[in-house]
Length: 428
Ligand code: HSE
Image (cartoon, rainbow, N blue to C red; front, side):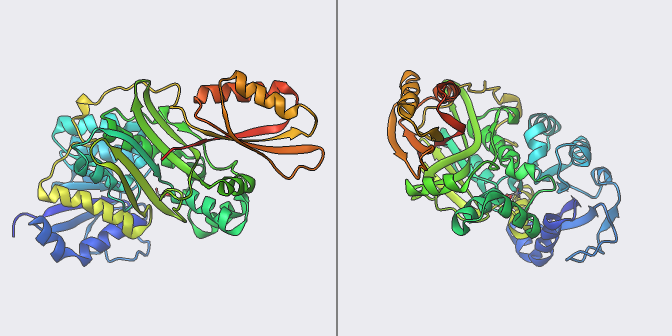
């Protein structure tokens, strides 16, 4: 058989051990498919003595992950350390500089440094691939880069943080509030080391910014992603949305319009009957719309040992087969610097607020909406207690700026109790 492809793996946590297991368990199948054996020659992790779920005793050990990049017997560095800076970045930079191809699962690293790293890899004639960084086991990078390469991509949407989707769907299923479910996720080990990466929408925002770069041929621009997490979602909103036929999801949406690149990772209402609305638990879903293909829905596990290692191996197998694709689907030097859209595409909005229960209160709110150019589609007043009247309004399509303006003006009406809730209804 021909020359083996030799891997150096940095990071032997859940995903790293998952990769070791696949390489060991499926050695013959991988070799047949790639036309050459895939071998692990060296590994690196923070603790050598730790008990792990796979035998790594036959691999060379490096205390310093960057040393993997300098080894003559390593062809591909697999970076599974994580983190946007620190050892992960140092390793990837060193690997490229030492002529290695790189496979990484690191969404934070690429969201912040993807353009410069892709350029460096390109200039060095190396590949830098990241299937495992977005939506775990769903081969969404491959779908966008290869399967849909003949399309003009019109919109990419996705539920890409399993922890948030678990919390939101469990709130609805069990009637428990956000705080109780956050605690449950902590107990179950579902949260990132910094939980705000999950519940603040940052982790999912990283992933969206990577998909947007491939979809629209633009430079990764995570800083331009409009981010809002799920910490303020109440059971009231979940129930009211459901009553009207919607589910609340932490939904990422990216589209390139005449106004620029829109990237949002925010709680949205989606029709409960759409696959996005039906997505339960820790599962991920990515919806891609192309001008020729129409709408594609990809669903699958977004995290975990097997699914994420499966995605890492997809990149390893491409390299073994000689498929050398650019990081973001086209030359990094050609990626556009798209301006961020200041105003999002118009959409219907869900507005919930509590009003003083007195004559003319609703009329004042309706007047503000009318004067802001916002038309009401549906309205409901529910469970008022004589003093306060909770009101739910669904608008016709409105620009996000007009909604923002109206919300600011609500405060001056003197009839509002507390802050209103406003969520976009994404038309899917
Ligand atoms: N914290 C992430 C999630 C893990 O919950 O989806 C995968 O990136």
